[in-house]
Length: 165
Image 1 (cartoon, rainbow, N blue to C red):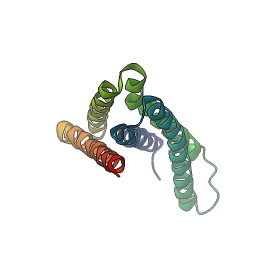
Image 2 (cartoon, rainbow, N blue to C red):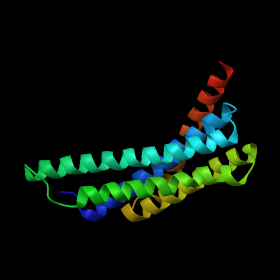
Image 3 (tube, helix red, strand yellow):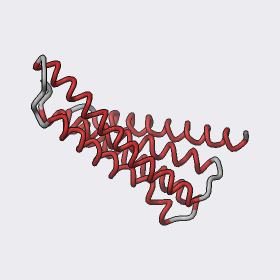
Image 4 (cartoon, one colour):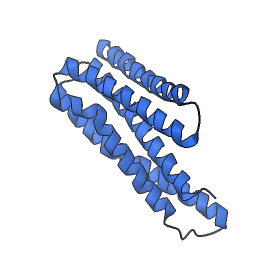
């Protein structure tokens, strides 16, 4: 059975990294498509809440299933519920890192700040998780940042492609 600390750590890291990667990728893509700032903000905020809830439900259901499998029946623990709450909070809080620049800056600057802040946050989360699990700090952190950067590139390519269509 997974220890409670491992369960929450997994949900925090997954929630933050998935939020940063998917939210900045989405925002970069719709920004690259020439979408007005108000629509980018609306899309980002709606996405953040819907996806945070979706991730929380997924975490709850998967953890509950794993717990039920372990005990061969009904699971009575609060672990799955708490894991879902941790996932929701991690996702929603991290999603505002790429959204906030669109509240503060003009579109061109907002895109670059959104990308920059998200990549730095991914690097920091990678460093923290590397420290916790005792793996190579920089290689783990840079890998997390580069994989997140790939989502940004995909978002921009799709946004440019759709704009041109």
